[in-house]
Amino acid sequence: MKKAVIIGGGIAGAQAASAISGMDVTLIVGEPYLPYYRMRIEEILSGKEPEGLEMHPQSWYEEKGIHVISGVAKRIADSSVILEDGRSIPYDRLLIATGSNARVLDIPGGRRRIFTLRTASDAIALRDALSSAKSFAVIGGGLLGLEAASAVAEDFRIPVSVIESAPWILPRQLDESSAAILQSKLAEKGVDVIVSGTVASADDSSVTLKDGRTIDADVLCLSVGVEAAKRIAEESGIECGRAIKVDHSLRTSMENVYAAGDAAELDGRLFGLAMHAREMGAAAAKAMTGEDVDYRPSEPSALLKVAGIDVISFGIPEGEMKVEEDGDRRRTFFIEDGVIRGAVLLNDKASMMAVKAMIGREAE
Image (cartoon, rainbow, N blue to C red; front, top):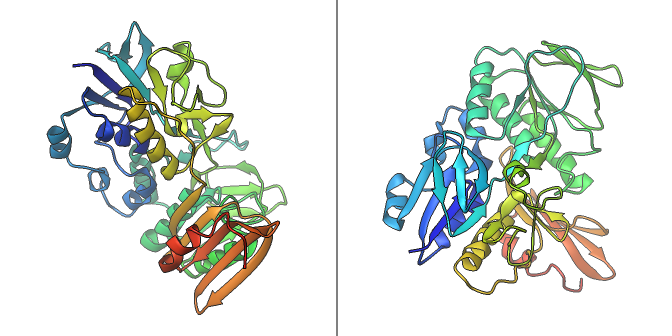
């Protein structure tokens, strides 16, 4: 039986492992845990252990015939994946689904330690630091940073700040007015959000902004985006740009090697949403087993929950705005040339499918 090897236990890798049929499947994960839902790691800050976030129990992989190996993949050579501990895993088809790494900033000021929040191990280290913290700040008003801030405010009862350089939080998903509503809800939970704030320096007790303001933070976390984890591909001679370059069959420049999820670059585009990771994992599984694949990414959408509020976005939040409000429910449509290009829903999960079907149609 031919061997399929997958590097990476995120959504793309796990989806591919579950979808491949007729091959012996090995899944290499870089952490000492079974694949888990990374978008829920703020729950670890609240006391949950990584095992509580697992996508599937060990028995599920055994029933599927998926061999899960814990180890760090170092390089690809002679149709084998070489791990840091020297083990060599042979393959007939290989999928690189290594995801992305947290971006870091070089902040002046001599601060000894700045945390990131990308892996379960990161979350455990941050939780340990918070156990004796007096104040906490997150640099970056994206989804993960906001969820972490909300969790810390609720569970640790210490002053919490979020510093966002853009004019409003979640700028990729929300329009300004929807973001303002969410920001007020975060304030009710004890999270002070600072927008258009640029960090100048940080010491071990505070962060100083370029406008001179000082924010208390004896624990500081960066949540300023990610960078594709492409190192193994680069060092193995696979063509890369900002991520690992693939065609519409998810094939890389190396024979029998594919890439999917955050680690992949298609037509110059990067992907940072779970929906695309899932799609690409499924498409790569088909391609690896010999099916003809012409992957075309779906229009972006995101279902989030921040500070107890359901936040759903479709398409691109740009163009003329049309707002519908019903109590605490809010729907914002973005219209360009008479066509609905995007939408944002707050506290209106029931309308999700109906609104999704409206994207790309003419506005009434």
